[in-house]
Image (cartoon, rainbow, N blue to C red; front, top):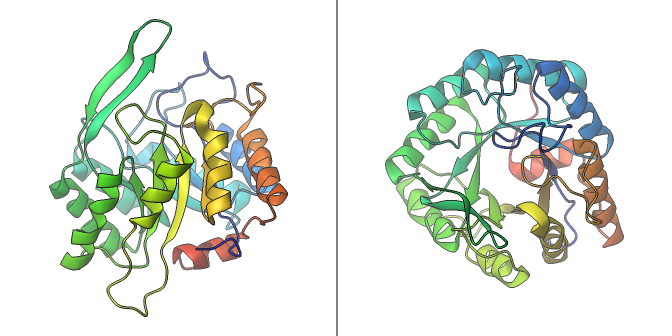
Length: 296
């Protein structure tokens, strides 16, 4: 990728952790997801990353909730956005995650590329707000990849550390992972790589090339968590990458004001893209960059 490439702007629409006590704009019901999707598309977002919830806001991994949310979004924005499902979780069997991929057939599905300590730390309290082991062993990664290959779903490789980037090469060599890749560098989680522009550049430099010299270049972007998000957005834009914002990752605009919708965050990301001299990708350009065919 280069500075000449259009920027794929993705929105992580809700996540599974934050709730309305923290941010009133987080969608719970399918209708609320659809309304947020409209705001996202109207402001220039072309891919929507979905964690399902039940209408009371409880995180869900059930087919019926993923189906209701994705159908509501499609009913509102049609083909104007690429639908991307999360597969990351703790304690939910791989078979259950594959079940909702099989039932709903999203165009893209996120795939976490390694195990890690996953935590949030409070400097003021001198303690962890939460801490857990986020297990993503190779057996599960391969099982999810094989299912995505079978279903024609493009994997989005979420890499929280440089070792996760290094885990891509053996999967390419095995033949279970096809190039060009779609890689997102997740930065700002305690237990993962520290969120700096230099570390982002190192992660990008380590994304493996294709199996031969004629392979297309991989597509990459950044996912900045919490207040470091906007600095990392600027870094990715300067390095030629794409960007993700949204209420899963960060609730605040650069001036510290809480976002009133995902549309507020996407509008700021689009403005930063244009201010740096690049342009947002159209949904057709995003599908071409990611290797995602147009929905038939």
